[in-house]
Amino acid sequence: MFRMTSFLWIGGFACALCVGSYLLAGGFGEPSKREATVQPKAEGNAAEVAKLGKENVESAENAYAAWVKTWTKDGTVVNEQPFGIIYQLSMRWLNAEIDIAKTRENRIQAYDRHAKRMKEWASEYQSLTGTSRLLIVQSAQKEAEFWLARERLAGK
Image 1 (cartoon, rainbow, N blue to C red):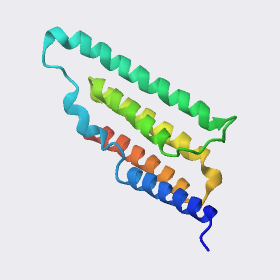
Image 2: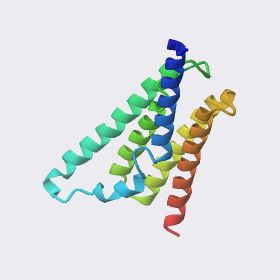
Image 3: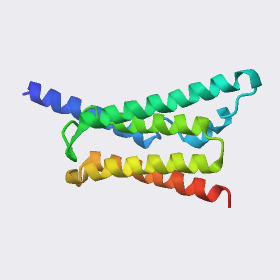
């Protein structure tokens, strides 16, 4: 007999599967591929583009900080839904920083901050050991660490 609880369980599983697939597929894509958009071509617009870039970074940072306040309280995860938003917000912040990065060191700092956010996220989910959510979070953390290590090696 098919009950409503079975339907809800199947729906929840399908949602987790979709989010996990999205994250494992690379989410927003690799930030280093965005570097071509960093420098504006027209001098007259450079100041405006720089201003908008800075505002974009601030907006992404504020969105991330606001969301973190909703999903943790005193270091404990209190709101797991929707699960993938913290990754998406961190990636948005990282991409905004990469977009305005003028030097390799700026990019390294952006990747480092993203890696720290992913490490913090993973530490919040340690209580979920063995669950698919923890595995997805750990995957996002490893991805961030890889991008940071690759950027550090790029100039050597």
